[in-house]
Length: 133
Image 1 (cartoon, rainbow, N blue to C red):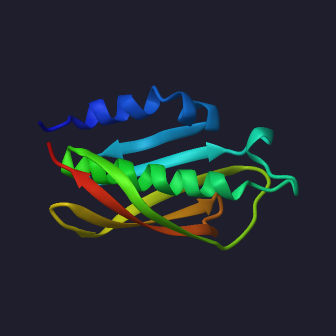
Image 2 (cartoon, one colour):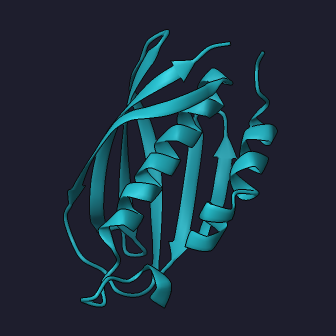
């Protein structure tokens, strides 16, 4: 059964976890997704910079959303690899994703997180299981 793009968006927007993180969906259409996070104190690590788990969460979120917008099915993260390139402690950050390869059962994705000036803060690749009912 195909899932509508609006249903996917609503399922993410109603998630208590993503709401707690403060992730905002700026743009969500088939084949195109962009999210934003305004850095707040609760997402900082002991050094006062954005916790690496937030980067990983955003990359997982954006890649999964993009995949679901294309396949109209559920998906599950099989592997997520993150490269941390620069630290940040305040401001807004943005994430976008691309499909590297989409198969019937497995998808290979990539994503980036940038600051407001466009500087790349983190890159990540993900392998996702495409769950076709």
